[in-house]
Image (cartoon, rainbow, N blue to C red; front, side, top):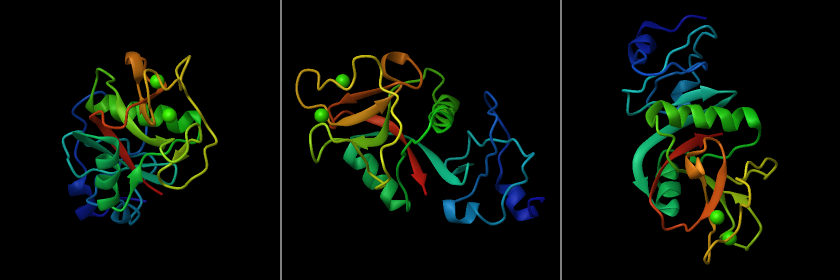
Length: 177
Ligand SMILES: [Ca+2]
Ligand SMILES: [Ca+2]
């Protein structure tokens, strides 16, 4: 399937390290569904601020503004999404690649996991079940007091998670299911 001419105009060319997944640059995840990009289209839109990336049936958006965990979730909600939930190694790698595209230093970013409601009971903000974990060794550890929100790329080690205080300010990824 080919993109329509209008859709093609929205897709921005790669300007940084290429990714190996199909990307569709559209104003909203809902519009990204129609039309679907062709499966051999490998583009990304690092220069496009309103870009949702299509991966395995879900839509992801990188937000290049630091916020507390709750404000990040509220921002995602305003876009019809939630902070990203991660359910397998492939999705974890995808999120890391997406972050790396905008932040080559692999800095810490919020994901939608927290144990705010009940210590030790980890929940995704989008209500999906916790069925995959990529904790850094020794984490989660509530180090030095309450650490109830989860960041990815802890210790500059791509892909590993750490529980950390929710009032920290990080950039983040939204996901529309
Ligand atoms: Ca905790
Ligand atoms: Ca920790």
